[in-house]
Structures are given as structure tokens and as C-alpha cells.
Length: 229
Image (tube, rainbow, N blue to C red; front, side, top):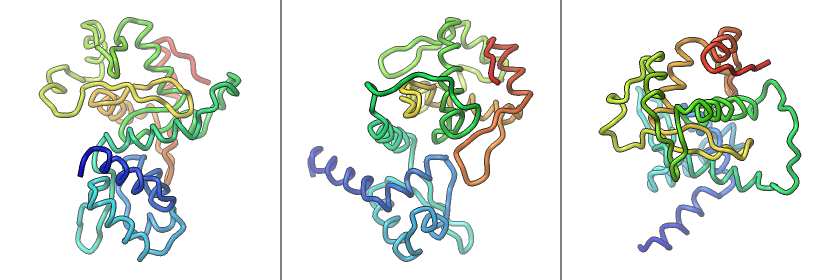
């Protein structure tokens, strides 16, 4: 099967409505059972299992078995980028967009995108890092300056810990709600983990939405000068 045939096959798998709903919900980076995914996809558990088998065969999702339970999640970050990219196409009315003050909550304001921070807050943070010279855009990635790595030391994130890995250290991930990139890759994932550990954000149950805590707002102001209401 050549590249064109593979593209057609994978596109058909991802864009089938039931499977698309499953993949959209798996974008939060967590693992779910077939029964849980059948609920979000509004289909029967048997049908959900059949769809997941096809996604497994194509290596779009992976499964982890714990006792009697099978937990499904996205196979890798590349799948997450593809799903997020499709969301950008769905939100591609650029000529009709009127910039207005974002709502202070909700999935468009602050959310996870697989394993990194997204939404208005995620974009605001990376644009502030750019303004301070900590990171700069380079093709599809970000270059982290020496003073940038020094800044990330505050979170105990070391450059040497993120190198020699198959996954890119940084990546620009186009945010479907903001139409501007946020920080993905190994650094984006580790950065979000550290912020969650410091309780800057709280996860909303059964949602990709994140809620900013009072501590998070204060720290973002102290460290980056970002004012979030």
C-alpha cells in the first residue's frame, strides 16, 4: 500500500462519525474503557468495541489491559496533532472571526490538548515566553534559548532530560480555538505536568477543561507578568 492509499485508509478511519467522537474525547490524554467510549460516542458497547478494533489495527489507538478491563488511549502524540488539526479545519472561518475578550472559563479558555496546555491560557503563556526571548518559532518547532532553559529550571525541567528521545523536544501545535500555536512536544508535556503538580490548574472531571487556581494566577503574574482574571 503506497502513501496515498494509506492516507485514504487512515482518513476514512478517523473521520467516521462514531470513531471521530471517540478520538475527540481521547484527546484529553486519558485512557477509557470501550463502555465509557460507547457513551460519549452514543453507540452500543459492542459497536464501540468493533470501532476500537479497527483503530487498534491501524495503530491510531493503543490498549492497556488491567485485570478484566481494557483501557484505550491515543497511540501517540502524532495522532493527537492530527485530531487537533482536523478541529482547526472545523473552526476555519477566519474571515468571520471578530476578536473579543475571551470568557474566563470553559474549554476554549483553558484545556488540555493530549498532554500539554491549550486554549487562550496556553497560547498566552507561549506568546509571553516568546516576548521574553525564552523561545522562538522555528519552522514547526520552538527553539529554547539559554535563558529560556534557565527559566525552566524553576520547574526542575532540564534540557538534558528531554534530549535523545524520538519525540520532538518542542512543537508548535495550532490551537483550534485561538488559531495561534501553543507549546507541545516533550517540553510542553513536562511543563504542564509541573504546573499541575504545583496546583496551578485543576482538572474538570470528564472534561478536557482546566480551571486556573488562585495560586496559578499569582505565579503566572509573578513569573511572566501575565494577568488572568
